Length: 141
Image (cartoon, rainbow, N blue to C red):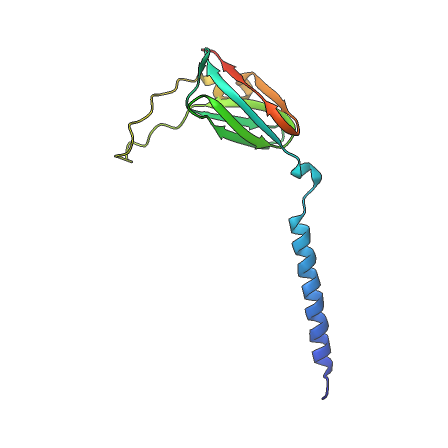
């Protein structure tokens, strides 16, 4: 059986190609330890002492990383994000779609003061550390 020079080159190129794909795959699967660290934040949002039954809690860092969580009917929320300093905002739920038709009756409107919708004006901030964190949010009208 005769081996041709081109067969050897193809075989070598195929081996190199497999190695390069394996290295690229492994590099894509790894991440820095900073990216893998995370904290879980849980809390309750109240408005004038009463649980806020609907809305969204938003966390945002200075460099634009963020996380959101929808409020549960009892006013609680849970979200995951990387450890950092966060500004916090609370926004009302979107209005029901009038074109959707059928389904459940629209939920009562939630009147969250406008200043809490804006990170710069809300006055809400917290530091998230690795692991479990609690941040209760008390809003006033």
